[in-house]
Image (cartoon, rainbow, N blue to C red):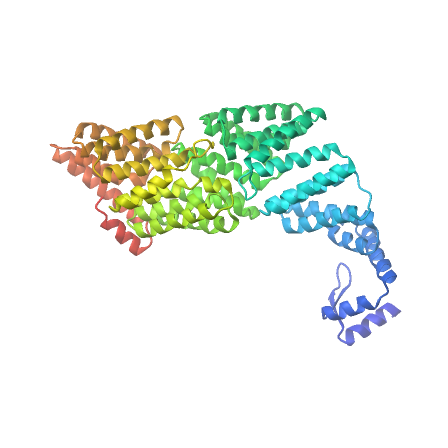
Length: 587
């Protein structure tokens, strides 16, 4: 028995250590951390350093094919052993590996240690320093630690200035401008636009088409999330794509096409948006970027859903949700859960819709996701639809508080959505003074300059129509309906077309214009059936029966059909109390 074996046996018998494994290598563990700390502390510093260095070198020699896998362990031993160059290399590898696994917290720790070692004097190329800052910034952003990400890019800029690295200065400027353009707690439209103009000039000066392509893409983002002309945003995107294709910048092509989905949709060009999605999705798969792939699915599925193409949107949204679940991307899970639930509501799957949108609310509120405000309002819409207006109003009030209390400018701009929905509920329950007060607050909020927020004005107009109907102001109700119908068709927001036509039919019936009402309601029925908007079929048929004055046989058939549609919806409501409320509704 060797001296080592004898010593290990004595330590094991004394209860200080225990055998952990025999294969592939013998491994012992201390039975208590205090024993380990005491033994470690008894060594003199030079002994500890030498031991750590020997362990690191032994691991390198024994497992040359597993160095990437063991990078974190190797980095620790070489850092403690005083070999700063090897520690730097392995902390960088460990951070990159953690980032590939979406272990963002772990990646941040490793990248921070690497940067600390450089500050302490280790030699590193400009490319490595830039890589570490950019990788740490991306990890912070994925972890929704936006203030930390911004501080990282500011530190990166200071380092670039101190070292005279103009290229790194350009990239730090671009990274900050990008972050300030996005809908986060640090969003700042004016500062981001100013930085982007500086970055574009510097990119020209340095003859850097790669970064110039990114700057042009970020100008698109700035318009998309802070306001501007969608056509100008599309133009920036096309310039970005042109440069990216010239220099085969595949990741940049993916990012630009991803955001052109929403920008082209805002410009009314859904066909080009689908082409952008096809290329972006292909590239995200090639690059193994599943969070962005999930988000691209959400973008195009939302566009299709708003356009009333529910059967096309649903499988795309479901795939986006599956991808988000696969990588634990809470942001995309919240977005896709909401969208799946919203489509299910239109398709008449009431309880399933409540569950999915409730899951979205639960996920989006803690992370400050912008959709938290309108998902709560949408959930309230479902409850009000089945007759529970009290819960609907409470959910809208919660959404209003979210918009008021948010530090994200874009979320504040979403305020009209829950205000307008709440006003509708007041109108539907005869609380007209409350409805007037709430809709006045909603209408005072300007959202028209932000691409993609066209649905906000839809909800404001729907509320105005409901209030006019409740006051029996039939003519004004018809006028607003016609304005909204034109808006829906111009902006490809046909999801709300059957409901608007239903409201117009009600106004025409109130105005004793039965023939026009019948024509309008027949159109509402046809579009709802084409879209698969099952939830509206019953109400449309009930009003259409009213329009069949003088033809009781046809009116009776329509009422019977409306009852079957109502029973079909009731069968999709699992909660007995909600089902009872729904069946007790007059329409």
